[in-house]
Length: 561
Ligand code: ARG
Image 1 (cartoon, helix red, strand yellow):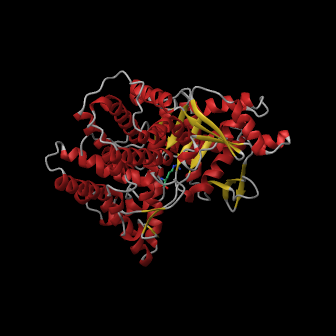
Image 2: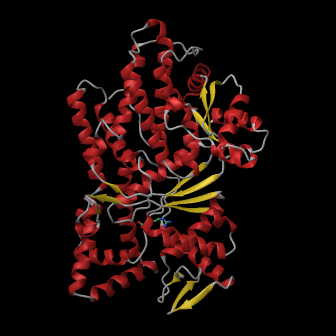
């Protein structure tokens, strides 16, 4: 960043402040080819202001720039290209990284502001779906990235632990359930019961009434129904927790939908007070605007809804955490829901509704098709993670059988592969699910980056270097692409924060890995005593940044694998 700003500063002065500094920064480009320099500035706008030819302006301004940080400033047609002074920049960048260690790239952009992140939020008694996996992985990475930028993330698991489906489940359990089986394999068993309920209800529609009644009794606090619900919830959570543990994810709150049962009345009253509630076909709704359907607050039978819970949750979160921003990491398919909820809050007069964002993501597909959790065709996330870990272990056994702590490292690789496969894509796109692809060591995978870092660590184990950074750190011209990548890390984090986009970081660690591997392929790092110090310092900087980049995505960086 610094160097781009420096260039902007020089341009600002050289054009006699005709363009603002911010405008200049925004117009600075990265040339397509490295031979064209490190930054380029197109002179079209200046030319328009000056009523002169862009080429002449470029030549004129280029001749006025003189800075020790630039090796060369040249006008190429309408562009001004600058080449950074490699030695100075390399020295500054590597020294900064070695001094700051894992804090490199940390900023105080967020000034400690609280950001609630609604993530994961699976539904009790149902399998942890691929959509919930995406939410978990993206939400957690956002939390880590925001934290690195000085925000205070609050991870909230808004469990789907309330709703009519629990009436159905209670009915099914009472009819066909078996306690020991449910205890042993909660989610599979409860899902089977739920499916059976629907199959049987097709034949005996009165079952649906039983289900409704059971839910009503649950809402009214019938001890027997409540005990069953609590038990399903507890057991399901235990299964989810195994997954969270494998993924190394913790939450600040696991208040699910049920938590808001006693907080919705207030929402309804507030809506009434503000004269926002209207009746529509017996139900209570809030009209949001002409383009969106109204937001349903209360059903005909008085039952409250998903949206009502989210309204109560928003108020609760604002009052409890005083958030600066509230993020909801939830699939695309709920975008209408969140638009309505945010609009209703705005109509209620809460300015902070402007700080609420639905962080959408696409679907996880298998062979181009939606992965269905219904009809028993379920891909269980825990099975996926286990398979990935097993595959990682097989790889270790064949390639590095004497490795210590094999199980832990296989977990770090297997789980990392699943996480990275998700995070390397722009979250808004659908992604294809393929365990084989995830685990490839060549290509755009988590294991590729982990392997690159392990390679760097192995070099560092073989050679000693001093902590005092060599002022001639750049002894090989092949190192320059690595240095420029290293310099970019803080900017990448800024961009990831601005766009709520962890894939910026994922793509960055891929880039850094590729350029380091290229360097490694060209330079025999350990062979030349004279340059050893400088080269090892560079390798160490790479390892620091890769490790930190992986951490921000929720991945470990084992030193050996
Ligand atoms: N449990 C919901 C589902 O699986 C997701 C909840 C998202 N969070 C929220 N505050 N609505 O669809």
